[in-house]
Amino acid sequence: MLVFAGADLDSMIKQLVRDALSHAVDRSKGAEENFRTFISKRLARQDTLDPGFLSSVLASRDPRDVLVSTLVADLISQSLQSKDQVLRVASYFDIPSAALATDLKLLDRIFGARNEIVHEMDVDFSQTNRNRRPRRKAVMIDHTTEILRLANAFLTEVDRGLSQTPAETLP
Figure 1 (cartoon, one colour):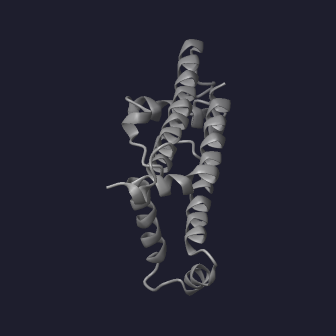
Figure 2 (figure 1 turned 90 degrees about the horizontal axis):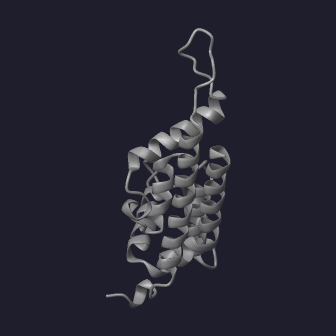
Figure 3 (figure 1 turned 180 degrees about the horizontal axis):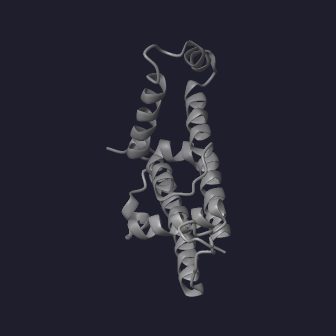
């Protein structure tokens, strides 16, 4: 259940990135600033400008759409199965980490357990018999509930941000 909750969180956030990130950049000064920072870093990836990327941006009918699409592709290209990855995406929506979770170490433990289950088939390699890691049902329910709560908080914060006045009219 923890693995599926994590997959659901990953899928939901990626869909929000596809559908709502452009609107968030329009409505939030913080999201707009993070978008600008991304563009600056993307342009400065190497010692010289990437002429192919720069020409595709400049030649397009709407350079902003090309740049937003580049950010979207970057954000959804990775599996969002860690606290840091989820919070990175949240930052592009201008969502503070405190709005998503009060115990960041708990999220590290939850995603750590999820990764042990998925990547190591929950085998405890420190034991000679290589038994499965013992996992208490109540703890797994709590972890799963926290992932679902995180998903709800993320969606709620994106919705709240999209209901704001567009950034250009903000002081």
